[in-house]
Length: 106
Image (tube, rainbow, N blue to C red):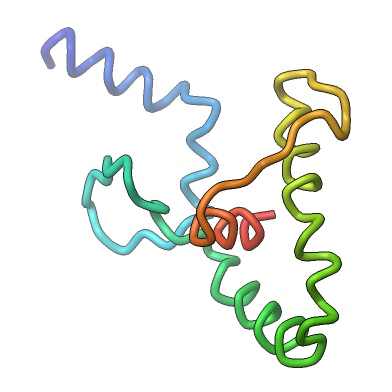
């Protein structure tokens, strides 16, 4: 095995994030590197979307906006932890698509 290939195998074996791969729907060997995409679908996302549509949107209608509008702050708080930002300082927002994805993941 060439040194570069050996290094790649070593990095894969010792990657602390490797276990996260099991959290996504992956049924092919495609190396997915598209930077303008939501990426692979997390395994929990289809069920979470069903919950949001059936339990929140369908039942709460406009009354559900209260907790939806606070999601940027809630997500910002979670994102601030790894970079040691105090709670309520960071706010996450983006396009509706990206925000929806963030809500589903959280």
